[in-house]
Length: 135
Ligand code: HEM
Image (cartoon, rainbow, N blue to C red; front, side, top):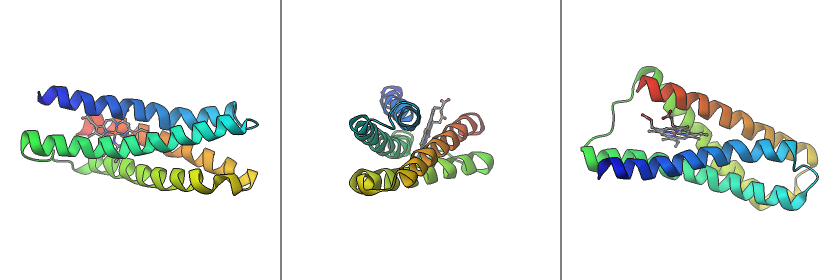
């Protein structure tokens, strides 16, 4: 049962990672002239960040309820986890803000936002690899 729940949480987490990493890349390379595509990609990105936050919390809740304690995260792993949480917080807030007000942003600021999202996901994915092997 425990493994099954971890698998479900990981499933959401993995597809969330694809959404947050893929949406800004597609937006920058293919969608800049297409407003409808950009709007859909913005939704995908925002939902992806929410999925990452929710499944990140899901990992902690599963460990706490199934194993009775949170995993001991220290040193390099803690730094990696802090980076992931930081990226996720910024991702959720910025994606939500962009979703609500982005149509009024200048083209330059929109471009900056998508580029920042690429940096955020590269950082989080790098941190994920570190967390995986130093936990
Ligand atoms: C609140 C933020 C986050 C938390 C708390 C969190 C937590 C976790 C945990 C506990 C794992 C399992 C580690 C293990 O296998 O031992 C994991 C795996 C993973 N996370 Fe996150 N994560 C967060 C955000 C993100 C983000 C933003 C991304 C990508 C953009 C991401 C990508 C991944 C990937 C790809 C794995 C699988 C690593 C592997 O097994 O090789 N995570 N995460």
